[in-house]
Length: 387
Image 1 (cartoon, one colour):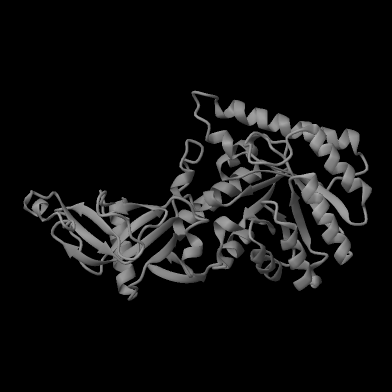
Image 2 (cartoon, helix red, strand yellow):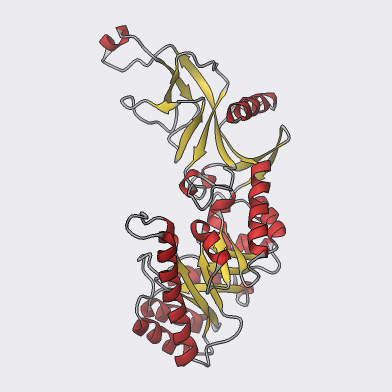
């Protein structure tokens, strides 16, 4: 089936006169993935969906997903993306996905004072960073919404003791005119990454949830004046989406990459999802075999593969078509004209396309000025976030 798909995609690209590397989103696969998310969320009414912008860094794509999944909650990892979201979504609720340097927040308010009341939750990982954010709030006479990063087992920083959380909450409580607690964020990508022989994913997930619940109880019991019904308890991510939709102490669920399903997100928990993102690269040259510089003696040996030089290369992606296409182990990689080997009997010509599947979307999308939405043999152009 994939053979037929890529042969047709190759023909459609050539019919459109396209002759440069393209990043393609397959409409049918994307729709199927959206439908899966819709069904899972419909059975988890307490969870509010939050789209991860870095993994879906294209405004048209985000608008489509926002409408289909019925959310204007976004997780943002890059300061310039904040303005893009605020300018295009009237009810935008933004949660920073990593703790920005306080200078970045100060720079934002210096240039965009009109957004001082926007729904932005600034992520805080230490008391020291909170102190810096407090100084920003005082300098600009604003009240910052503060979300606290907690370590639920990933061990990538964030609060990891009750004492650390207590100190942060005490500082928030001390300056209510400048700081307001907006919730917690606990990323649990480790749940599906730890080999099952070490610890089963279900057990790892339960342990991470217990850590999360303990911190929730600490706020409720020791800082009742900071507790309110609108607190955002964010968790998840694409790898643990299915866990949270079954049972979660969180009320806010982030995801993004799973909707495009690059290969890093292949797992037993995402088998129903379809790969929806491809790179298409034109073939520039077809040679009967690979000639290695200064090794002409090898030219006389029998060759099982012929050599292609393509337009571009060295992406975080794996070759998927033609079958058995791969970079040459000795010739080396190139982001300009990559050499790849294909079987000698492979029917491929100059100006045909080879296809790759990205390993992740967040690294690949910014490398292309646009996405091409592939729908019924036609391509719709969507600009990406390049900055």
